Amino acid sequence: MLLHHPVQNSSHCSSNFLISIDPKSNQLDTLSMCMSYGKHVGVNRVSNGSTFIDKDVLAFESLLQIHVNDERITSLLGTPLQLEQLYVGHLFSEGYGDFRETKITLSRENELSYKIYGHGELTKETNLPTLVTTSCGACDGENLLELNKGIQHFIQPHPEYNHNELFAALQDMKSSQLGFQQTGGMHAAALWNHEEGLQCLSEDIGRHNAVDKSIGHALISRIDISKQFLLLSGRCGWDIVAKAARSGIGSIVSIGACSSLAADTARELGLRIFSFMKQDSCVIIGGLTHFLNENP
Image 1 (tube, rainbow, N blue to C red):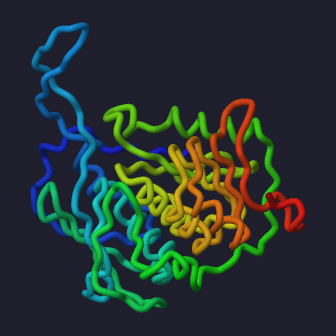
Image 2 (image 1 turned 120 degrees about the vertical axis):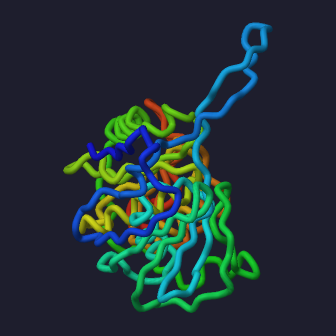
C-alpha cells in the first residue's frame, strides 16, 4: 500500500520559495513536506445543546496554476500536496500531452497560491485559461454534444474482477485516507488491480484533482494504467469518466452514485462503472464484456 505522509510541523518553511523536481527521481514532494493536510482554525462548536470555543482542522484549498512553456494552461482550486503528480496527471487526463519526463518547477507564492511550471510539446490547442473549482471538473465545451469529441474509446480487454475484492479495495482506500481522517473534507482516488493491490492513493479537496494525482503518480511510476481499476471515494460524474478514458483506464469503482452523463459517456466510449459499491451489491453501467448484448 502506497501512502503519502506530509510532515505535520510547517514552521520551518518559508512563505515564498522555488524548487525543481525531476519526476524520474522518485523525490518526495517538497511542498508536501512543508505542511499538513489542513489548517487549525478557531470555531464555535455546538454539542449536546452547549456552545463552546474550540479549534478544528480545515482542509487546505489553494489556487494552483499550471504552466507549460511559460503559458498558463489552467488554474485549479485544490489541496497543495503531490503537485508534481497533479501536474503530470492533469495535463495527461485533459489531453494536453505526456509530461512525465519533464522537470517540474514549483513556486509557492503564499499559503493561498502555487505555480507549477514545466516545458514540453502540447498535443492539444489551449484556450483562454480557465478556473476549475473544487466542486466540479472543467467543462469548456459550448454544448454537451461536443464533450466527448476527440476522446478515445477504451478498446483493451477489461480486467477480470471479483466483487468482494473491489469492495475490500475501497475499504482499504478509505482506511488509508489520512487527509480525510484529519479534516473530514477530502476526496480520495486510487488505482487497484488483483496483482498489485492498492496503488497511487491520492487525496484532494477536489475529486477531479485526486484523480489527476493518482493518474500522474501512475505515469511517473511507469504503471500500466490500462490494467487498473480507478477507485473513487465519492460519486462519479462526466469529468471523471472523461479523464479515465483519455488516460486509458477502462474501469471505475465508486462508493457513490453515477451521473446520467457519466453513464452515457461510459457506454459510448466502452468503459464500465461500478457505482454504489457495497459489500453485497453494486450497480454496474457499461461494458461487462465487449459483446453489445451484455452491455446494459
